[in-house]
Amino acid sequence: MPEQKRDILVASDDPCGKPRRGSFPNLNVCGDIGLKIREDGTWCYEGSPIKRKPLVKLFASVLRLEEDGHYFLVTPVEKVPIDVEGLPFIAVEMSRKGKGLDQTLAFRTNVDDVVTADGEHPLGFQTTENGLLVPLVEVRNGLKAKLTRPVYYELAALAVEDPKSRKLGVWSAGTFFAFPASGD
Image (cartoon, rainbow, N blue to C red; front, side, top):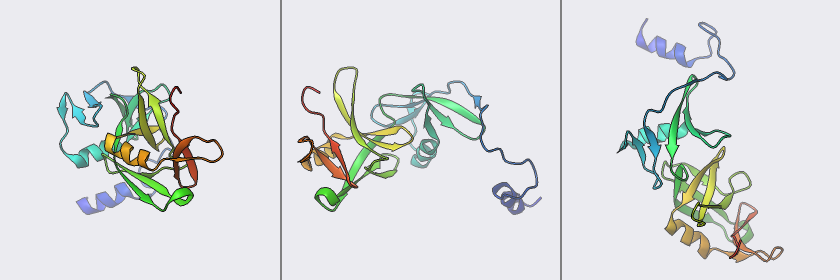
């Protein structure tokens, strides 16, 4: 079979071959193969940084967080555990459109995902084991990005007081995201 024809068949919905399954509940869980995301967002294989950004972006596109808090790379037929120190992504850039109640804040991650802070992608803070607050934004399906210090400083500079709650925070896409008060 010519290579071109085979590619068309693999990518088509043509009923020849095995029918597609809707979901894959019995995925083959592979053992630990040495994948890790460091605290600074560096993706590693067997302790060495993965330097090919397209490969990291591919892995990031199939990263999933299970209900038990473990991370996996999930394909249609298998899933591979991955060790994540802290949060899997880093928000490295923030952009702002508009002002006040009408502003929207978008964040770009270290794997070039861009997400607008809104009701589905909230801004928040997570407390570390040391009691420190880490600013974050939800990217997708429970996966979160830690804001870098410069991005957090940009965000903090936009803080306003919400007239209803009297708390400091920021507006984005019509939602107010309160900053934790000291002592919270």
